[in-house]
Image (cartoon, one colour):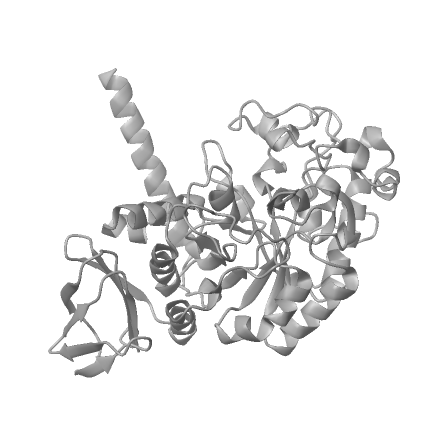
Length: 470
């Protein structure tokens, strides 16, 4: 057992060293990111349009919609997020055409995109080619005809639920959560899906989040019995045409994939196609918030083998909030503190998940209305301040410090600005090295006083507050 233990430790050390080298190679010359994403989860197209001025004023670069395609209609079209209706019905595609009963019509999507462009915000759309709804009889006839008949719609293994998520064949050909797995290598399917993607772009979309991306095979993955080659990502990213059709505007799109981290996930190969979510880093941030203490490794280690400039980061996602409610117990205040940490950093592209309006720890669904705006946390002054700080600090490299036994996180960006987070429920006094010029400062939200003198920054911090100085 001791030999096995040391072997595991050595393997982990090698893996970490490899990941660090991969990041260093990818990130030379070093770059910084300045974009932010608002995930307008379950907001209708009209609701997003009506709130676009606030979204822009809050400093977001992108607004991400829930899936825009024709989807499964459950509970007679009920419009509750959970109950008489379900948020996850729009994650059960029935056809690849713009518009559904939960979010709105194609014309409303177009109007939303036009309003976004007018306000300098770009639109990301959640797309999910990997599966259909549980009820296969609800799949539209146009979809079935386009792929060459029902027998060509799913993988040979596609109606079998995945048993081992770390087995690449099972993971990429079986049903995620039991959802029937589409034969994404079928050229007829690829063509039909890309018609939808290009229509979204023509209507004003600027990029995409690919749901369950790690469940779509890479060229190096084993083949399903119905597949000749794993070329979906080459087609989807515009590297090759399918039946004469190519991804439109491919050089101007922002695309990232939901490649949740686990054993035997080919992060680097996926990273050759698109950016990815840093799910393990999100877990580390939530642990910081739950314990109200941080260490340097938790804050700075991206826990990913792909260059951090290509990672989408979050405190929580709609999955961590809804599935098993693993992040729903965090208060809105805690989420804000985590958002300041992730957003003040020089890399990653942070995504702010809009929680349901009226939510409480005891009632996570809040007002429980599909299509309605989430709560106002997306435009809280602390959130707005760090969004704008991020843009102002573009090109400035970070220095992270942990103070007061882990209770305070300080993220300095060059000699131009500092973000400070008090994780604790008690006041804290700080005395930290700084590159800021000697003078007195006030943070941009609360007007709290800070003094920079002889290379030291001193102040008293209120409980559970973040401060932005620049």
